[in-house]
Length: 577
Image 1 (cartoon, one colour):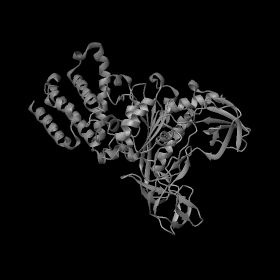
Image 2 (cartoon, rainbow, N blue to C red):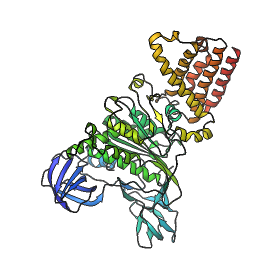
Image 3 (cartoon, rainbow, N blue to C red):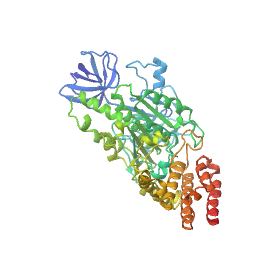
Image 4 (cartoon, one colour):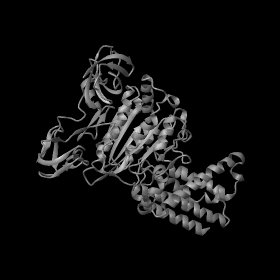
């Protein structure tokens, strides 16, 4: 099927003579065969968003339909790769075309030359259904890639071919002569089917104290990180990508500045996985779509990322997708919608903004895998960049309607070099109560009570600070001055972390629990000392104050011993008074 270009408007073109094409079908545009997607059909005229620069394209050039939707290749070789929004491997394109990628150039997302050592799990005569695990391949030294049958598969195995094969070579033949290889394609805008959805059970641990303790995110959950320019969205996302306990990380740089994405591409290959000492890239996939790339590709990059995350979820892994940032994706939707001359909604965004965001975040979840008994999860964490830090703008509001964790960044905290700059008074997590049984069993029986007590102190501090600004701290009673000092310890000694310190950059949940226990024990002993007539200024001269401030820099292996010594000192000094 071929048509003719009749109109060009930036990344949007119109072509006539496109009878028989379908929505979301991929087309090749012009003599350079630029990749585009049909987003509107009227009669025999199709509107096409092009994922590459349309400069130099002329009316009258040919548009060729491919008969398939925008899809990604799924199979061994994804981990450690760097792709653009349409899953073109950037490292391979750079080797072929240099630092500046030539328009229209294409390359296989998965190498057809590399051979993988395939070890079958199923055998001749076994019944195979969609999602069933055919065999395994060691994709990296620590990551086992489970070769799963495409969801539509159904039949009896006639032949299995063990050994080394490229991804596109047949490894399994069914009785109906269907041939299966180690890879298959999947349309990015269609959620992958699942067995059944499961309840949330455990948290996604990030090593960031303000997140794990105060505002936990569950595996299979959704979170939003809105914040103004310079508040630390990208740094927080990168910290999550480095340290969270998901087994596979997909990081999507959607419309981000080139220098930030370049930093990610330079830094990630050098990072060491804290769990096993291997390179972190061995379980990471990067999708780079910078702000100077065509806007239409931003939408593709988000869908490409979530589809790859779902694929590893279907093997039975816990996956995490970092989308930075969805505001740039929404801006691309607004530009394309304007060129389509659609009726604008609030602030010029299309009326379907909310439904598009919802359909994206709803692809998160914890599931029973289709065709096998494994359980997997996909956690989605989206950064939002509201202009001027205005959280009432449409993208932020529509995101908060569908996400259950809100990590609100504060520019004032960022200016004070408080990292992560997450405002503990405006942020929230709707998973806290759901995860309480897990925390009581795995962290400490009093962990939820400690968290609530700490939050109460922080909220009380906020109320008292209004009085302090008017009359000064000396006008407050001793008990309220102790609240201010204790809340300051929580803020500076617990919530604040040093992202560049070799020890403090990551904090295990057990260490977080003991740190918070020490601070709250100090507050309780201080309150008891006040009732015996001691003054706050004498309490704050306690040698434990300095030791509490240094807790964050004590290595994990030495921390429990240091904690027992510190807590004993607090009790001893309190009894002495």
